[in-house]
Length: 285
Ligand code: SF4
Ligand code: SF4
Image 1 (cartoon, rainbow, N blue to C red):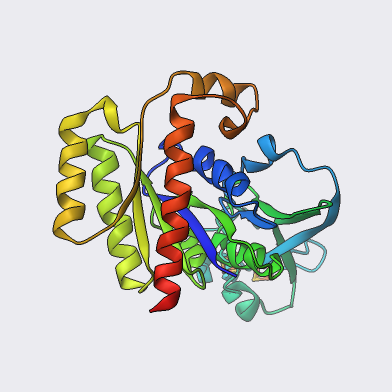
Image 2: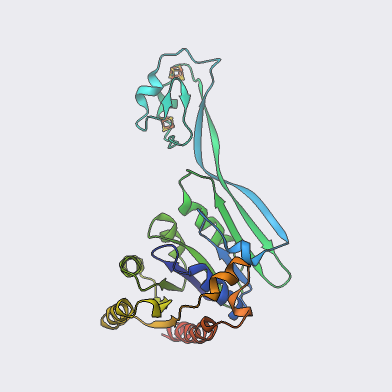
């Protein structure tokens, strides 16, 4: 089995649209959405058979038991995150370091599991889908990403994983253990800068990657720069998808663009063949 992770250095490049198209084209039997801060693949996949839903414990959180507290304020002084004020813990500021618990002279601070989000798996008749949602303001997104990926069963087809935008903790966690990364970029200054950052991340983490330029024809000047950059660094561009205004309207109707005729479709189909070739090439090395 090969795991293909679809990433973009920034949001809005069409990453999820392309991931979804590839899931269909590869007849993926196991796929996941690890964009845990803002998952949206489920909106179009619309999975029905929920197999498992469970709380994600991201760490510890504390609560002051007012019946035991003697109001010495030592916990406030010990907290380096200013999470305690007026003898109340701000759950959004608490980092779960437990320093306050250590200093409390009367053991008035309870330590609780911090339910930071939830994971969902769907076992449909011919495929398996894993996703998760992190609660607003919670950290540990990397741990949750790893948790989602671990739910994916081993299958012989290519497993597609829709990653997070950016280069932060969830992206690093999502790269770990995948066979190949597809970086979806767009021809804009920020798109190119973020592509370069994600390429550096892939190189540091020593994972194979390739590039796709989505809506390549909206700014040929920057597309040429991306092509030049990739050529100089011997990076394979597996796809150049033309801008197609119909794509957005199909997305709004929750329609996978592979199921309708769009000018982008042929390019994505062509790209899917190149990705398979590239994966086979890497596997044979
Ligand atoms: S656990 Fe750490 S961060 Fe949270 S309130 Fe206590 S000292 Fe502050
Ligand atoms: S250290 Fe303990 S007793 Fe003192 S204020 Fe904090 S919770 Fe209350």
